Image (cartoon, rainbow, N blue to C red; front, side, top):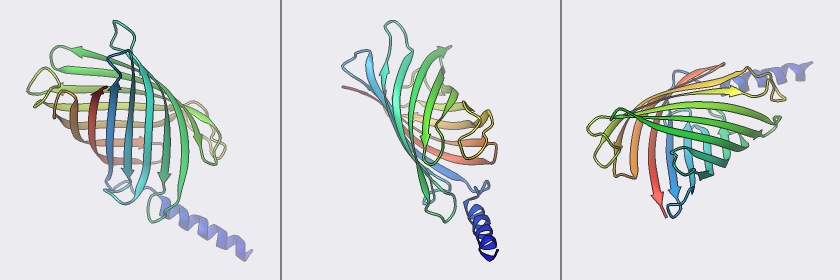
Length: 229
């Protein structure tokens, strides 16, 4: 009986340490790239993200993702098949982490409205293998909007406002450990960007992430590059 109460106490204290502090501002540091291969229909795209529960030092996630892209002739749509490796940390003082391997398929559909509005729809389907959990899938839809402020193209010297909203939906109702809702999370982002050149941009913004269990604000610092080889 004594051991039983000790285990309960340990469990409760662990959960209190692992609880997300919603009032604490987090920060994500990100690099996004697109590579065009000899001006062909094929390419490579991906991103590296170093995410923290606080400004820096309390690991939320280390995400490494990359995929092969294909752009059909006479269209601006981009289709991707890729792989991601994710290490997720525990909020607070704990150094515990768990791993995830992920395969994803994606369709990116950009369009320009009037002279200054750059709209992009992203549809993504993920297959996820998370450590000590059952296999599951997830559907994502992201609507991006960039609005140029001192020009009509995203070229050197142009400032722009950046917005996005992304909805995540679970494909399964259980991960083998706990039940899952259809709704997984939602992310809403507001930021400002600057084009360093026609192929490189930097952004600084704030993102609000809402799950069934917590809601938290995150700073986002990102570098975006389009490369040709």
